[in-house]
Length: 302
Ligand code: FAD
Image (cartoon, rainbow, N blue to C red; front, top):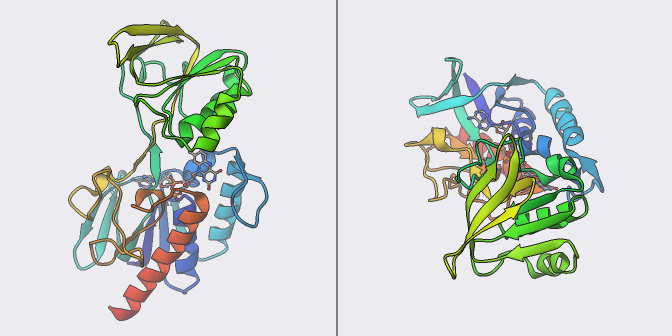
């Protein structure tokens, strides 16, 4: 069996694997897609000590750093079930069952869907989630951003520099984004904010041609013609497969203590899949280190 088995290959998982392997213990890492969200990230300017890098470049150096150590890297493998017996057992989609004395969950998060007609149909045909990745595809076109939180307003500011016009659609009567971001957006000539608006449908034929929303104050339906819709209403943790195992918040985030331990002994967690206050690369890396040291501490006591 492994001493430490890490599930998830983003910054949290990479950090956990390196910290574990440096203790000279048997370490494995399973990743559906090594790099995680960082693979979808363009410019990164807040990884302290690195003024500027780009997602795929950071992922390549994470991979290189992990491979510097004796770590079993199992990329393109998805975990589907966890069970605690004498050892912790993790079953993969391909049927294999891995056994380990400790497990570190670092399965990260994914974009939240708005779940309206048209969203699934027009995914990659006008419906997008990553402004950094897909923004340039809408150069000179009209787009909407659904969601007025920090990620929505950041996306709108970013897109305004590329597209012809951005319409932000926020469900609540007020934007939730930081006021500095709101001020920045309001200073832009080609951005409009519609508050108190419920998105009803993303319309189109072979690709997106508009969005329909209901003004929640009047109940009146409106249609805006545009070519792209960016959904920016938050992230969902990739923890559904853990049903009935570790305790999670009502948002599905794995609850951890300050050693990264979950409610199931021998199982630790780190990064965006946990109830950490903020979701960032450096925070994920820090919590991955914490979870690995927590797991090591557990191993020497049990
Ligand atoms: P993730 O990066 O989500 O990695 C999760 C890993 O788990 C992946 O390898 C995934 O394939 C794997 N996985 C999931 N489910 C399973 C399963 N069942 N079995 C096996 N493997 C599984 N942060 C910053 O600090 N600076 C930025 O500039 C920045 N920009 C961002 C831009 C975008 C577009 C996005 C999406 C995020 C950005 N972030 C940024 C946030 C940052 O990327 C995340 O906080 C960070 O990647 C979280 O790391 P993680 O390891 O917890 O999870």
